[in-house]
Each structure stands twice: as C-alpha cells, then as structure tokens.
Image (cartoon, rainbow, N blue to C red; front, top):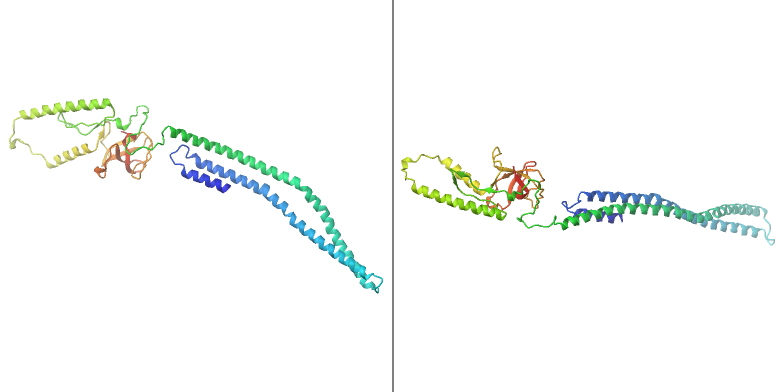
Length: 354
C-alpha cells in the first residue's frame, strides 16, 4: 500500500504542470504523505508486529515440550515393565538387577513428573493469555490506523482544494491554448498600456516634409486618425511637387559636392527605420551597439518554444535586430534579457518601452 501510494503521488507530481495553480504545494504534500506512511508502518512493526512474533514463538517450544513429555512417559513405562518382569515369582530373583531396575524407574518417574508439572502450569497460562494479548495488540493497531487515516484525510482534503482551485482557474480561461500570433486579452493595471496600443512611426520628418507615416491601429478611432494623416500627407506631397515644378533648373556647377559615406549612412538609417518600428517614448540614445531600444516587462511570460524568452514582471529586455529580417513576425520582437543575457523572441504586447 505504501509503495502504491508513493507511485500514485509521484505520477501526479510528474503530470502536474509547472504553471498550474498550487504546483509548488504538491511536492510538499507528497513528502508529508510519505512521512505519515512511514510513521504508520513503524508503529505497526514495533508495537504490533514484534509482540505478535514474540507470542507466536512460544508455540514451537510448548510443542517440543509436549513431545518430550511423551518420550519420558514411554521411558517410565519401559522401566516399570522391566522391574515387574524381574519381580515375577516364576523367575529366579536377582537382587542386583532388581535394585538397578528400581533406580532407573525412580529416575524416569522424576523426569516425567518434572516436565509434566511444567506443562500443567504453562499450558493453561498460555491459553488464558490469548484474550489480553489480542485486546492489547488490536487496540494498538486500531489506534494507529485511526491516526493514520485522520492524517491522510487532512492531506487529501488539501489536495482536493488544490485541484478545485485549478478547475476554477481553468473555467476562467487562464490555461486555454491560444493560436500562435493571436493577441492576448489583457487587463490594464493602473496607467500601464499594452504594447500593441502604442503608436509607431517608421520615418522621421525632414525639412518640413513628411516622408511616410504608419501606425498599428487597434480601434476604429485609430483608423480615423490614420485616414486623416494619409490625407494630410497626400496634400503636402502635392504642394511639394508644385513647388519643385516652379523651382528654376540649376546647372551642374551650382550643385555642391556631397560625400558618398554620408549618403550611404542616410540610406542605411532610412532602411533601418522602415524595417524596425521604434515606439513612441522609447529612448534610443546611450545604448550599447546593436540595441534599438529597451523595454520593461509588464506581464509574466513563459516561452512555449526553445527560441522564445521567459521573463517576469519588471525584467528589462534590449530589443535588437533579427538575425534574418525575413523571419520577422508581426507582434514579436527579438531581444536580449539584461539579467541573464539570454536572446530570443518575445511578444511585444507583454512589454512597454522605456
């Protein structure tokens, strides 16, 4: 029973997932249950098993003594018949043989009487002790059983509450499987906003001309803002085109020389801005090489794949470029966890830029 109980609890601990409610309590309850089983087995062995073994060990000795009394009775009868045959009138009396026969008869009678008297004392006492022995040992066993099942009931009641709490959280949808890339329904806490509601902009405003503008709208209000921005951009681009038509054509001598390195840097910067969205409010200065900006975790996340990061609320993550830009997924960022240096993917809506 103890081995079966231990195997059951080990199996339950193994199948109980780490992110389920009360996972840290299950090994503790398993250890307490093993201690209760060990205490119960020790009590049965020391207070019940040992006395029963001692009581049963008397029966082989009594059985041997009874067999010995039978042999001594046979010896006594043999000596008695031998003496009677020597004392018959038809035979010639031999006083020396008769004297030796009497001595052997007396010795055999004494041995028989000693062992017979011992059995007359021990057998009734052993028989009468059966009731007191059974009462004492059964009381000990039943008391131990009662205490054992009482402690067991406490532990199993606590385990019942644990799985009931797990069932309630499951009904709330906490452990429901979500499709990859689907947004999570998160509740706002204080002033914290989900990352996906933060507006992004792909380019900068240069010389009063808006190059491009892009956001990640999530509501109808955001869509109206985007339509208004696009209309303004088209109007400004039209005005800019008219101004360029009115400008006089310059000769080649009027143009100033431009360094090739500045042109390439400007193109690379513009390409980088178009590839990676920098959220509003993110600090991009005084960062290590290769770091685009930093974010702080607003929710706990446990990675489901080997290439995903695991982090707690408040952890700082450095957002870096993808090793392969074609692998970039919508709503996911590549980052390095500052506390451990681990690199991997993480959902953007679990963090907030700093």
